[in-house]
Amino acid sequence: MEASPFLLACRRKPVPHTPVWYMRQAGRSLPEYLKLREGVPMMEACARPDMIVEITMQPVRRYGVDAAIFFSDIVVPLKAIGVDLDIKPGVGPVIADPVRDRAGLGVLRPLTPDDVPYVTEAARALTGELGATPLIGFAGAPFTLASYLIEGGPSKNQDRTKAMMYGDPELWDALMERLTDITIAYLEVQIAAGASAVQLFDSWVGAVAPQDYRASVLPHTRRIFEAIAPLGVPRIHFGVGTGELLGLMGEAGADVVGVDWRVPLDEAVRRVEPGKALQGNLDPAVLFAPWEVVERRARDVLDRGRTAEGHVFNLGHGVLPSTDPDVLARLTDLVHEASARG
Ligand code: 1CP
Image (cartoon, rainbow, N blue to C red; front, side, top):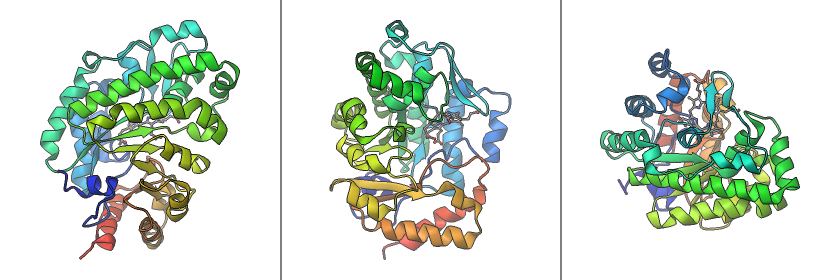
Protein backbone atom coordinates (compact mmCIF):
# COMPACT_ATOMS: atom_id res chain seq x y z
CA MET A 1 0.00 0.00 0.00
CA GLU A 2 2.75 2.49 0.91
CA ALA A 3 4.13 1.90 -2.61
CA SER A 4 0.91 3.24 -4.13
CA PRO A 5 1.68 6.10 -6.55
CA PHE A 6 -1.02 8.21 -4.90
CA LEU A 7 0.48 7.96 -1.41
CA LEU A 8 4.01 8.42 -2.77
CA ALA A 9 3.03 11.61 -4.61
CA CYS A 10 1.24 12.96 -1.52
CA ARG A 11 4.51 12.38 0.37
CA ARG A 12 6.57 14.04 -2.40
CA LYS A 13 8.43 10.80 -3.15
CA PRO A 14 9.36 9.51 -6.65
CA VAL A 15 6.46 7.83 -8.47
CA PRO A 16 6.30 5.31 -11.34
CA HIS A 17 3.60 7.50 -12.93
CA THR A 18 1.53 10.52 -11.89
CA PRO A 19 -1.40 9.22 -9.85
CA VAL A 20 -4.91 10.31 -10.76
CA TRP A 21 -8.36 10.28 -9.17
CA TYR A 22 -11.34 12.57 -9.65
CA MET A 23 -13.27 14.58 -7.12
CA ARG A 24 -16.87 13.36 -7.20
CA GLN A 25 -15.82 10.29 -9.21
CA ALA A 26 -18.33 8.23 -7.22
CA GLY A 27 -21.99 8.91 -7.63
CA ARG A 28 -22.19 11.24 -10.57
CA SER A 29 -22.42 10.22 -14.18
CA LEU A 30 -22.01 6.46 -14.03
CA PRO A 31 -25.04 4.51 -15.30
CA GLU A 32 -24.33 1.73 -12.79
CA TYR A 33 -24.57 4.36 -10.03
CA LEU A 34 -27.84 5.84 -11.28
CA LYS A 35 -29.33 2.34 -11.48
CA LEU A 36 -28.30 1.47 -7.94
CA ARG A 37 -29.66 4.75 -6.55
CA GLU A 38 -33.11 4.37 -8.17
CA GLY A 39 -35.69 4.93 -5.44
CA VAL A 40 -33.05 5.34 -2.70
CA PRO A 41 -32.78 8.88 -1.25
CA MET A 42 -29.23 10.25 -0.96
CA MET A 43 -29.13 10.32 2.85
CA GLU A 44 -30.33 6.72 2.99
CA ALA A 45 -27.67 5.63 0.48
CA CYS A 46 -25.02 7.31 2.68
CA ALA A 47 -26.15 5.26 5.71
CA ARG A 48 -26.12 1.86 4.00
CA PRO A 49 -22.73 0.12 4.05
CA ASP A 50 -23.61 -2.12 1.07
CA MET A 51 -24.37 0.94 -1.06
CA ILE A 52 -21.36 2.90 0.15
CA VAL A 53 -19.03 0.02 -0.72
CA GLU A 54 -20.51 -0.61 -4.15
CA ILE A 55 -20.65 3.06 -5.20
CA THR A 56 -17.11 3.70 -3.94
CA MET A 57 -15.84 0.72 -5.97
CA GLN A 58 -17.59 1.59 -9.24
CA PRO A 59 -15.17 4.27 -10.50
CA VAL A 60 -12.16 2.24 -9.36
CA ARG A 61 -13.29 -0.70 -11.48
CA ARG A 62 -14.26 1.38 -14.46
CA TYR A 63 -11.43 3.90 -14.66
CA GLY A 64 -8.50 2.24 -12.88
CA VAL A 65 -7.94 5.40 -10.83
CA ASP A 66 -5.14 5.42 -8.24
CA ALA A 67 -7.41 6.08 -5.27
CA ALA A 68 -11.00 5.55 -4.18
CA ILE A 69 -13.02 8.23 -2.41
CA PHE A 70 -15.51 7.16 0.21
CA PHE A 71 -19.09 7.60 -1.04
CA SER A 72 -20.84 9.97 1.34
CA ASP A 73 -21.53 13.69 1.63
CA ILE A 74 -20.08 16.47 3.74
CA VAL A 75 -23.36 16.85 5.68
CA VAL A 76 -23.47 13.19 6.83
CA PRO A 77 -21.77 13.87 10.21
CA LEU A 78 -24.18 16.75 10.87
CA LYS A 79 -27.18 14.53 10.20
CA ALA A 80 -25.60 11.85 12.40
CA ILE A 81 -25.55 14.14 15.45
CA GLY A 82 -29.16 15.15 14.91
CA VAL A 83 -29.20 18.23 12.65
CA ASP A 84 -32.52 18.19 10.79
CA LEU A 85 -31.39 18.22 7.15
CA ASP A 86 -31.95 16.51 3.84
CA ILE A 87 -30.20 16.38 0.48
CA LYS A 88 -32.76 17.46 -2.10
CA PRO A 89 -32.23 16.10 -5.62
CA GLY A 90 -31.02 18.81 -7.95
CA VAL A 91 -30.50 21.23 -5.05
CA GLY A 92 -28.13 19.86 -2.43
CA PRO A 93 -28.17 19.98 1.37
CA VAL A 94 -31.14 21.82 2.92
CA ILE A 95 -31.21 22.59 6.67
CA ALA A 96 -34.63 22.76 8.38
CA ASP A 97 -33.60 25.21 11.12
CA PRO A 98 -30.64 27.32 10.03
CA VAL A 99 -28.13 28.24 12.75
CA ARG A 100 -28.23 32.02 13.21
CA ASP A 101 -27.86 32.61 16.95
CA ARG A 102 -26.29 31.16 20.06
CA ALA A 103 -29.32 28.96 20.80
CA GLY A 104 -28.86 27.38 17.37
CA LEU A 105 -25.49 25.98 18.44
CA GLY A 106 -27.19 23.59 20.85
CA VAL A 107 -27.79 20.97 18.18
CA LEU A 108 -24.06 20.75 17.37
CA ARG A 109 -23.01 18.20 20.00
CA PRO A 110 -19.74 16.26 19.70
CA LEU A 111 -19.66 13.31 17.29
CA THR A 112 -18.64 9.84 18.50
CA PRO A 113 -17.90 6.72 16.42
CA ASP A 114 -21.24 5.28 17.60
CA ASP A 115 -23.02 8.01 15.65
CA VAL A 116 -21.68 6.69 12.34
CA PRO A 117 -21.39 2.88 12.61
CA TYR A 118 -22.16 2.56 8.88
CA VAL A 119 -19.07 4.65 8.06
CA THR A 120 -16.83 2.36 10.08
CA GLU A 121 -18.42 -0.77 8.64
CA ALA A 122 -18.20 0.43 5.03
CA ALA A 123 -14.64 1.75 5.32
CA ARG A 124 -13.47 -1.56 6.85
CA ALA A 125 -15.13 -3.56 4.08
CA LEU A 126 -13.69 -1.24 1.46
CA THR A 127 -10.10 -1.49 2.58
CA GLY A 128 -10.41 -5.25 2.15
CA GLU A 129 -11.99 -5.00 -1.27
CA LEU A 130 -9.67 -2.27 -2.56
CA GLY A 131 -6.46 -4.25 -1.95
CA ALA A 132 -3.53 -1.98 -2.82
CA THR A 133 -5.70 0.97 -3.91
CA PRO A 134 -5.86 3.60 -1.14
CA LEU A 135 -9.16 4.82 0.25
CA ILE A 136 -9.53 8.58 0.72
CA GLY A 137 -11.76 9.62 3.59
CA PHE A 138 -13.14 13.15 3.61
CA ALA A 139 -14.98 15.82 5.51
CA GLY A 140 -16.34 19.28 4.87
CA ALA A 141 -14.20 22.02 6.40
CA PRO A 142 -15.79 24.17 9.12
CA PHE A 143 -16.31 27.22 6.88
CA THR A 144 -18.14 25.24 4.22
CA LEU A 145 -20.24 23.34 6.79
CA ALA A 146 -21.00 26.63 8.56
CA SER A 147 -22.17 28.10 5.26
CA TYR A 148 -24.81 25.37 4.80
CA LEU A 149 -25.90 25.66 8.44
CA ILE A 150 -26.20 29.45 8.37
CA GLU A 151 -27.62 29.93 4.87
CA GLY A 152 -29.94 26.93 5.24
CA GLY A 153 -28.83 25.46 1.90
CA PRO A 154 -26.66 26.15 -1.14
CA SER A 155 -25.75 29.82 -1.53
CA LYS A 156 -24.05 31.75 -4.30
CA ASN A 157 -22.14 34.33 -2.28
CA GLN A 158 -22.26 33.11 1.35
CA ASP A 159 -23.58 36.54 2.42
CA ARG A 160 -25.22 35.52 5.70
CA THR A 161 -22.22 33.39 6.54
CA LYS A 162 -19.82 36.27 6.09
CA ALA A 163 -22.24 38.62 7.89
CA MET A 164 -21.93 36.41 11.01
CA MET A 165 -18.15 36.15 10.56
CA TYR A 166 -17.76 39.95 10.35
CA GLY A 167 -20.55 40.98 12.72
CA ASP A 168 -20.49 38.49 15.57
CA PRO A 169 -16.99 37.01 15.78
CA GLU A 170 -17.72 35.36 19.13
CA LEU A 171 -20.70 33.44 17.80
CA TRP A 172 -18.73 32.66 14.63
CA ASP A 173 -15.79 31.23 16.58
CA ALA A 174 -18.12 29.21 18.82
CA LEU A 175 -19.79 27.72 15.73
CA MET A 176 -16.44 27.04 14.04
CA GLU A 177 -15.10 25.44 17.25
CA ARG A 178 -17.96 22.97 17.37
CA LEU A 179 -17.68 22.15 13.68
CA THR A 180 -13.93 21.69 14.06
CA ASP A 181 -14.45 19.15 16.85
CA ILE A 182 -17.04 17.27 14.77
CA THR A 183 -14.77 17.27 11.72
CA ILE A 184 -11.77 15.97 13.67
CA ALA A 185 -13.85 13.15 15.18
CA TYR A 186 -15.33 12.26 11.80
CA LEU A 187 -11.93 12.10 10.07
CA GLU A 188 -10.56 10.03 12.96
CA VAL A 189 -13.38 7.49 12.50
CA GLN A 190 -12.53 7.09 8.82
CA ILE A 191 -8.79 6.78 9.43
CA ALA A 192 -9.34 4.25 12.24
CA ALA A 193 -11.47 2.18 9.86
CA GLY A 194 -8.77 2.12 7.19
CA ALA A 195 -8.75 5.35 5.16
CA SER A 196 -5.17 5.88 3.88
CA ALA A 197 -5.54 9.61 3.23
CA VAL A 198 -8.09 12.32 3.92
CA GLN A 199 -9.33 15.34 2.02
CA LEU A 200 -10.81 18.38 3.70
CA PHE A 201 -13.27 20.04 1.30
CA ASP A 202 -13.49 23.78 1.96
CA SER A 203 -15.41 24.20 -1.26
CA TRP A 204 -16.88 27.65 -0.62
CA VAL A 205 -14.08 29.37 1.32
CA GLY A 206 -13.02 31.18 -1.87
CA ALA A 207 -15.70 33.74 -0.91
CA VAL A 208 -13.39 35.04 1.84
CA ALA A 209 -10.56 37.60 1.54
CA PRO A 210 -7.07 36.54 2.71
CA GLN A 211 -7.04 38.68 5.87
CA ASP A 212 -10.40 37.27 6.96
CA TYR A 213 -9.29 33.76 6.12
CA ARG A 214 -6.22 34.24 8.29
CA ALA A 215 -8.20 35.62 11.24
CA SER A 216 -11.45 33.67 11.13
CA VAL A 217 -10.89 30.40 9.26
CA LEU A 218 -7.24 29.36 9.32
CA PRO A 219 -6.95 28.79 13.12
CA HIS A 220 -9.80 26.27 13.02
CA THR A 221 -8.58 24.49 9.91
CA ARG A 222 -5.07 24.33 11.37
CA ARG A 223 -6.47 22.65 14.49
CA ILE A 224 -7.98 19.92 12.30
CA PHE A 225 -4.73 19.19 10.47
CA GLU A 226 -2.74 19.24 13.72
CA ALA A 227 -5.17 16.90 15.46
CA ILE A 228 -4.94 14.22 12.79
CA ALA A 229 -1.22 14.63 12.05
CA PRO A 230 -0.21 11.91 14.56
CA LEU A 231 -2.34 9.40 12.63
CA GLY A 232 0.21 9.61 9.82
CA VAL A 233 -2.01 9.70 6.73
CA PRO A 234 -1.58 12.35 4.00
CA ARG A 235 -3.94 15.31 4.42
CA ILE A 236 -5.31 17.10 1.35
CA HIS A 237 -6.92 20.55 1.53
CA PHE A 238 -9.15 21.76 -1.32
CA GLY A 239 -11.33 24.75 -2.12
CA VAL A 240 -12.83 26.45 -5.17
CA GLY A 241 -11.87 29.98 -6.22
CA THR A 242 -9.04 29.95 -3.70
CA GLY A 243 -6.25 31.37 -5.88
CA GLU A 244 -5.67 34.21 -3.41
CA LEU A 245 -5.75 31.78 -0.47
CA LEU A 246 -3.43 29.03 -1.69
CA GLY A 247 -0.50 30.16 0.46
CA LEU A 248 -2.65 30.37 3.58
CA MET A 249 -4.27 27.02 2.84
CA GLY A 250 -0.79 25.53 2.78
CA GLU A 251 0.00 27.28 6.07
CA ALA A 252 -3.04 25.61 7.60
CA GLY A 253 -0.93 22.47 7.58
CA ALA A 254 -2.05 20.04 4.88
CA ASP A 255 0.45 17.83 3.04
CA VAL A 256 -1.26 18.41 -0.31
CA VAL A 257 -2.95 21.60 -1.51
CA GLY A 258 -5.78 21.17 -4.02
CA VAL A 259 -5.88 23.78 -6.80
CA ASP A 260 -8.93 24.63 -8.90
CA TRP A 261 -8.61 25.26 -12.64
CA ARG A 262 -8.14 29.03 -12.34
CA VAL A 263 -4.48 28.97 -11.26
CA PRO A 264 -1.94 27.06 -13.39
CA LEU A 265 -0.03 24.53 -11.27
CA ASP A 266 3.38 26.14 -11.89
CA GLU A 267 1.94 29.41 -10.56
CA ALA A 268 0.39 27.53 -7.62
CA VAL A 269 3.89 26.21 -6.82
CA ARG A 270 4.98 29.82 -6.36
CA ARG A 271 2.01 30.62 -4.12
CA VAL A 272 2.26 27.61 -1.79
CA GLU A 273 5.16 27.26 0.63
CA PRO A 274 7.79 24.59 -0.13
CA GLY A 275 7.24 21.12 1.30
CA LYS A 276 3.74 20.61 -0.12
CA ALA A 277 2.45 18.44 -2.95
CA LEU A 278 -0.25 19.83 -5.25
CA GLN A 279 -3.43 18.25 -6.55
CA GLY A 280 -5.36 19.28 -9.65
CA ASN A 281 -6.40 20.89 -11.87
CA LEU A 282 -8.01 20.21 -15.28
CA ASP A 283 -11.20 22.26 -15.72
CA PRO A 284 -14.03 19.68 -15.49
CA ALA A 285 -15.77 21.47 -18.39
CA VAL A 286 -12.82 20.61 -20.67
CA LEU A 287 -14.13 17.04 -20.68
CA PHE A 288 -16.99 18.20 -22.92
CA ALA A 289 -14.55 19.36 -25.63
CA PRO A 290 -13.23 17.12 -28.46
CA TRP A 291 -10.64 14.57 -27.31
CA GLU A 292 -7.72 16.47 -28.92
CA VAL A 293 -8.49 19.40 -26.64
CA VAL A 294 -8.80 17.18 -23.57
CA GLU A 295 -5.47 15.57 -24.41
CA ARG A 296 -3.63 18.85 -25.01
CA ARG A 297 -4.96 20.38 -21.81
CA ALA A 298 -4.25 17.27 -19.72
CA ARG A 299 -0.66 17.20 -20.98
CA ASP A 300 -0.33 20.86 -20.07
CA VAL A 301 -1.52 20.10 -16.51
CA LEU A 302 1.04 17.26 -16.31
CA ASP A 303 3.85 19.51 -17.59
CA ARG A 304 3.09 22.26 -15.09
CA GLY A 305 2.60 19.66 -12.35
CA ARG A 306 6.21 18.54 -12.86
CA THR A 307 7.32 21.80 -11.24
CA ALA A 308 5.65 20.72 -7.97
CA GLU A 309 7.40 18.57 -5.35
CA GLY A 310 4.62 16.03 -5.78
CA HIS A 311 1.61 16.03 -8.12
CA VAL A 312 -1.69 14.19 -7.88
CA PHE A 313 -3.64 14.68 -11.12
CA ASN A 314 -7.28 15.60 -10.61
CA LEU A 315 -9.91 17.92 -11.98
CA GLY A 316 -10.11 21.50 -10.71
CA HIS A 317 -13.47 20.65 -9.10
CA GLY A 318 -15.86 17.71 -9.15
CA VAL A 319 -16.83 15.64 -12.18
CA LEU A 320 -19.84 17.36 -13.80
CA PRO A 321 -22.97 15.19 -13.83
CA SER A 322 -23.26 14.86 -17.64
CA THR A 323 -19.61 13.86 -18.16
CA ASP A 324 -19.11 10.88 -20.48
CA PRO A 325 -17.54 8.07 -18.41
CA ASP A 326 -15.56 6.93 -21.45
CA VAL A 327 -13.73 10.28 -21.54
CA LEU A 328 -12.72 9.84 -17.89
CA ALA A 329 -11.50 6.31 -18.63
CA ARG A 330 -9.44 7.59 -21.56
CA LEU A 331 -8.09 10.50 -19.52
CA THR A 332 -6.97 8.13 -16.76
CA ASP A 333 -5.02 6.05 -19.29
CA LEU A 334 -3.53 9.17 -20.85
CA VAL A 335 -2.30 10.48 -17.48
CA HIS A 336 -0.72 7.12 -16.67
CA GLU A 337 0.95 6.70 -20.07
CA ALA A 338 2.09 10.28 -20.56
CA SER A 339 3.67 10.42 -17.10
CA ALA A 340 5.22 6.92 -16.98
CA ARG A 341 8.84 7.07 -15.83
CA GLY A 342 10.89 4.33 -17.49
O1 1CP B 1 -17.18 10.82 -5.57
C1 1CP B 1 -17.12 11.47 -4.54
O2 1CP B 1 -16.38 12.46 -4.47
C2 1CP B 1 -17.86 11.01 -3.31
C3 1CP B 1 -19.14 11.56 -3.12
C4 1CP B 1 -19.39 12.98 -2.63
C5 1CP B 1 -18.52 13.97 -2.10
C6 1CP B 1 -17.02 13.94 -1.94
C7 1CP B 1 -20.69 13.50 -2.59
C8 1CP B 1 -21.90 12.78 -3.03
N1 1CP B 1 -20.64 14.74 -2.01
C9 1CP B 1 -19.32 15.06 -1.72
C10 1CP B 1 -18.80 16.26 -1.08
C11 1CP B 1 -19.60 17.49 -1.13
N2 1CP B 1 -20.92 17.66 -0.92
C12 1CP B 1 -19.04 18.78 -1.30
C13 1CP B 1 -17.57 19.03 -1.45
C14 1CP B 1 -17.12 18.73 -2.82
C15 1CP B 1 -17.45 19.72 -3.88
O3 1CP B 1 -17.09 20.90 -3.70
O4 1CP B 1 -18.04 19.32 -4.88
C16 1CP B 1 -20.06 19.72 -1.24
C17 1CP B 1 -19.95 21.20 -1.37
C18 1CP B 1 -21.27 18.99 -1.00
C19 1CP B 1 -22.62 19.54 -0.82
C20 1CP B 1 -23.54 18.99 -1.83
N3 1CP B 1 -24.08 17.74 -1.72
C21 1CP B 1 -23.96 19.56 -3.02
C22 1CP B 1 -23.55 20.95 -3.54
C23 1CP B 1 -24.67 21.92 -3.39
C24 1CP B 1 -24.22 23.35 -3.49
O5 1CP B 1 -24.04 24.02 -2.47
O6 1CP B 1 -24.05 23.83 -4.64
C25 1CP B 1 -24.81 18.65 -3.65
C26 1CP B 1 -25.56 18.81 -4.93
C27 1CP B 1 -24.86 17.49 -2.82
C28 1CP B 1 -25.61 16.23 -3.08
C29 1CP B 1 -24.76 15.08 -3.43
N4 1CP B 1 -23.56 14.71 -2.83
C30 1CP B 1 -23.10 13.55 -3.40
C31 1CP B 1 -24.05 13.16 -4.41
C32 1CP B 1 -23.93 11.92 -5.24
C33 1CP B 1 -25.06 14.12 -4.41
C34 1CP B 1 -26.30 14.14 -5.30
C35 1CP B 1 -27.35 13.39 -4.59
C36 1CP B 1 -28.73 13.48 -5.14
O7 1CP B 1 -29.12 14.56 -5.59
O8 1CP B 1 -29.42 12.46 -5.06
